[in-house]
Image 1 (cartoon, helix red, strand yellow):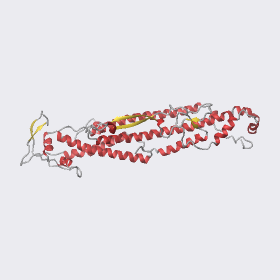
Image 2 (cartoon, helix red, strand yellow; image 1 turned 60 degrees about the horizontal axis):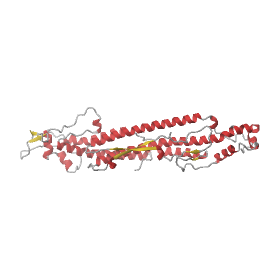
Image 3 (cartoon, helix red, strand yellow; image 1 turned 60 degrees about the vertical axis):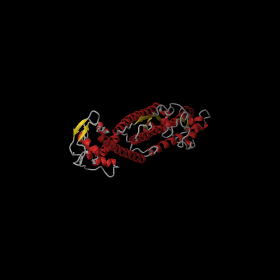
Length: 398
């Protein structure tokens, strides 16, 4: 999937990648638990445990008798894992360490050059079924922990926003707008009838001509009308083109924020899935890099505010979800080093960092809305109010 374009696409894409993340965590946690038990090493914390101040393990495996049991070849759980993990985790284990037919009755603990020989019993109460079963619970909890911190954007429907933006672009075209330098040079939505713009231009361009047609419309006030109302028609229409385009740009900015951060969510989690599946440190960083893109403000784009007396209806066109609204791509490397907890922790930290850029984008959007509103309020009503030219026409022809 190149990017979630609709509500339904995003919901399914996010659910799928979270399923993959949880399944990869289960696989890596089972491997990690197995390796830590047979080596006597500590099990690293899962993400949700790492964030807690207190945690009591379901079973303390770092004991000489557990190590002796794990290395004896008699553990049902470890045999299940090493045999291909057919079916679910065994729910019980006899806990045999040695028997009358032979077997080690002591073990070196800790299992290092500094260890000493420690006697061990024939059997133990094996808690490895509980410990191995934690892999699924930890994975579920970490999935939930990450999901709760993702920017959701689950309910917004980008096609609806696209339709609204295109309608505003069509309005701008009706008002005579054309593409200016510095943005996209064309857009399918900026194609419609120019009847209104042509009529206004006809009035505006004939201010200096004889007053006969003006007298038909205004009587003896023709000269005053030419200098006042008729002189405002061009700038007024220009401002309506700019306002339609400005509203369209704001919708475009909002949709770009939604679309971009939906993709960011999917990209970061996908990178974590890749990291969990890695088995060697030679895996390229590019394959493990989580990417997110920041959305830039449109406040830096010129030519979208209404003006006091301009008649130049050239507007800045920004393509739908286009590059002019996108900032630099940020890369965060998600590590793996056989530690599923570290992958989840790095993912969590990346999500928080990405969410910070989202807050900046949201603040920028709010600033753009305020700046646009202030620009509209700054233009006198003379250059904002459209007027039906036929209302005062004695004949209805002007």
